[in-house]
Amino acid sequence: MSLRIYNTLSGKVEEFVPADPPKVKIYTCGVTVYDDSHVGHGRSLIVFDTFRRFLEHLGYEVKFVRNFTDVDDKIINRAKKECVSFMTIANRYIASYYKDMEAIRVRPADVEPRVTEHIQEIIDVIQRLIEKGFAYEADGDVYFSVKAFKEYGKLSKRSPEEMEAGARVEPSEKKRDPLDFALWKASKAGEPAWDSPWGKGRPGWHTECVAMIFKHLGESIDIHGGGLDLVFPHHENEIAQAEAITGKPFARYWMHNGLVTVGGQKMSKSLGNYVTLKEIYTKYHPDVLRLLVLFTHYRSPLDFSWDKMEETKRAYERLKGSIEDLDLLKKLKVEAGGETPHPLYEKLKDFETSFFEALSEDFNTPEALAKVFALVSELGKVKNRAFSEGKIYETDLKAYEEVAESLLKTMKGIFGLLEDLKPECEVQEVVAKELEPGKVLDETLVNLLVEVRTLARKEKQYKIADFIRDRLKEIGIELEDTPSGTKWKRV
RNA sequence: GGCGACGUGGCCGAGCGGACUAAGGCGGGGGACUGCAAAUCCCCUUAUCGGCGGUUCGAAUCCGCCCGUCGCCUCCA
Image 1: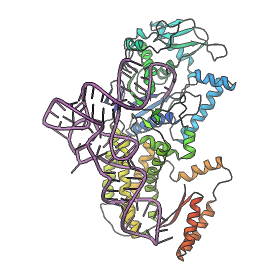
Image 2 (image 1 turned 30 degrees about the horizontal axis):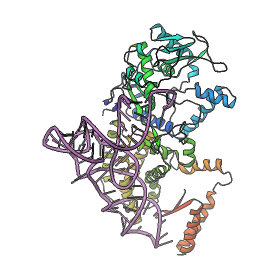
Image 3 (image 1 turned 90 degrees about the vertical axis):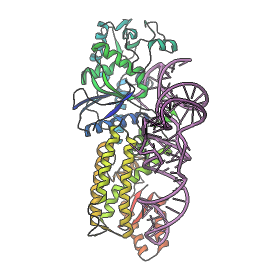
Image 4 (image 1 turned 60 degrees about the horizontal axis):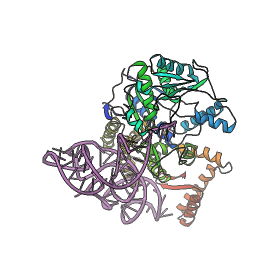
């Protein structure tokens, strides 16, 4: 089965063929560590994390690199504000980032380089550009000469001429051309600085990814990814630098995820309309965020709202429930017989085929999820029959078990969902402890109440039984009576 | 101003020339099951795909114009 993905460079969906199969080299632009990550960052991270898992599943040997920008204006400004060094800020938010990634199950990349550990490599790139006549020094700064690179604009589909007409580019006396961009910035007093052939300074933003890719992946990679907002100028500038040096295609496929919006407007720090990942996962199981992201095609905009989180949570609980229900079914009276080539197996086969077909066509996760929920419905039918009859046929149970386990394996492995089934209690417990230390539930006490209620129901004391159920609900515990007994969960 | 994307049922969201009598999720209504709920299932809500014109045997899907929304052009996932 061939994989097809949309390539920003060509503007088309193309068949994906790595340069040196089965190896696949991927690089995505990571975060600038000056504050906590928000849902916009989260989306990009989740999209590429899932895509990487899918590639691995297809049998590719993926080498995945994702960087940290740990020195730039925003970090420096924040450091000044707090009267600490920029490294303190960077380290703090790298730690925070790792906490977030663990929570939302984004696996670490194979290499996670930091700019400050690649200063020499960056200087080397700049020097090569100067030697080749693509860059020039001006009073301690170094700029890339955009006009010297004739293919400039090929990724973002714009020409230098057009851009000069629009001319919102900041004029600088040091630049020979307003479109030129900084590769190296002479440092001002009190700013982090490194020695260079052009004096003390620090790297401009666009060079770091080139230097890190050259070092960790080579001169040409298979896939370069990032948010749509990086297409111009960042990725365009990367191409200019890398290809000016090597004369080879820098990345063969460029993948860009759509942005997260709030009420239709881009989620961003500057607009102040952002929601941090920490806020998300203290209120919801992190899987709900992953599912929310996967429910929209990666190239479409995703409009975030808390209502949507609620909707997604219900869908998530249905998915999770279909797998957890296996435990309930196992407790039923099992009766010999039932359909022998069980129809569920056929459904499972259909699912597996269509699920991977959907992902292979420009990574269509919403369509893949449609297939998931079709299977969930099939499982529900079996459950419905069993619960209605108060017993289950042997073949039903066996088929349910195998299908549920297979589905769970796929959800875990590729979508990164349901990695710890029955995780909800644990996760929420941890959160609850952090938030309100005194308010941790005593499970044995809840179980006791449930037992008392079961007795009451046996005696047909329904008023008492309902009272217990209602009161438990008020303190956040929901009861569900099943033929296999009563189960409860926190809400 | 320049470049680009999008507009699908109550909401979200796939589909991007013929298996579309348009996937899936969420919500609402009815029913089965249940002491009652919950969970699950079944049925309905539920679609001529922003508007107009064109290309085609055939268009949600291609082209043009218009309206609306958003993104990039400055740091941004």
